[in-house]
Amino acid sequence: MKIALGVTGGISAYKAAEIARELQQRGLAVQVILTAHGQEFIRPLTFAALTGQKVITGMFGSDQQEANVESAIEHIAVAQTIDLLLIAPATANCLGKLAHGVADDFLTTLCLATKAPVVVAPAMNVNMWEHPATRENVERLRSRGVHIVEPEAGYLACGMTGPGRLASVEAIVAKALDVLGIRQDLNHEVVLVTAGPTREAIDPVRFLSNRSSGKMGYAIAEAAFRRGARTILVSGPTALHPPEGVEYVPVISAAEMRDAVLARLPEASVVVKAAAVADYRPARVAAQKIRSKAQEISLALEPTADILAEIAPHKGNRIIVGFAAETENLRDSARAKLESKRLDLIVANDVTAEGNGFDSDYNTVLLLGRNGLERPLPRLRKIDVANEILDEVVSLRAHGRS
Image (cartoon, rainbow, N blue to C red; front, side, top):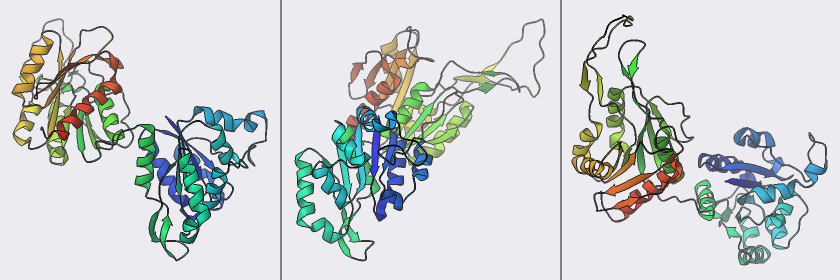
């Protein structure tokens, strides 16, 4: 999703940088439109560095860009590609122009050209905010479906006290996400996710591992963060980049993953064990590389720690979600693991199914719950599977089951 962030001229324009950053951390692309008066308070380079996107500063190009046909119709291109227009801060002058359909710069022209929803966060002197003209303009915008984030009361830059201060960054971002339909239903949770494989050393150059890519666990971490949770991702070695905003804890072996999970467990209210932790490790790790020989060698294995079993005695009111990657007897094997590990929810998938599971961006899973839930999901993208899993977590919390 893409948001156009309009920044007009006011002392609170600097907060728009924080707004842009927060939106990005929720996985949204942000393009800033900075008005001429806005540039008196904050420079375009700040937003360009934060967003990695071109900052639009004029209707027909800028001092660094010669006007051409492309720049002349850029407002139409932006209008057709954005999912939301957010103006923060919006001055009294901006509100007046929007209310009366004035289109004398890029931002106001974009407002007329886009069919995307519009969110406006006003900020101004208390007398300006309470003036009848401003109140009429606000109500006119509301009547057209514009979403208004009311300013807060407090000490203003002009020295006066009263309503007019820009709403908090959190309130503005929450409204934008709500209008976009992006849920924030995990904002009171701390979600601990494990992902990826583990590697169990044989010697300094060889190890035992499995085919897990980590994609499912990373998708869950990304989805949890987008839905407002503080998210901790404990990951074995993968080729993936951790989702932005997620607390990332890299590990290699099953023992390291166990230690990391137990160390972070007191912070977590939800645990999602999506990692493919090795069940066995070499009983003895050779100090030097085992030389190649034209003869057979035997490798003695010992079991690794059962992390889920160690979590169970400390469950408390945490919601615990496990995974079962199976090649046969999917439902029965998963149900047995659900009960034996005292899980609230288990996600079972047949890893032999073509086009699903390891290395794929898709998965077909069966959700089983301790509350009797049995819900097969169709083949979905892993990020969509992640949200289905988190929907069940939200439902469990709402019904007091943990």
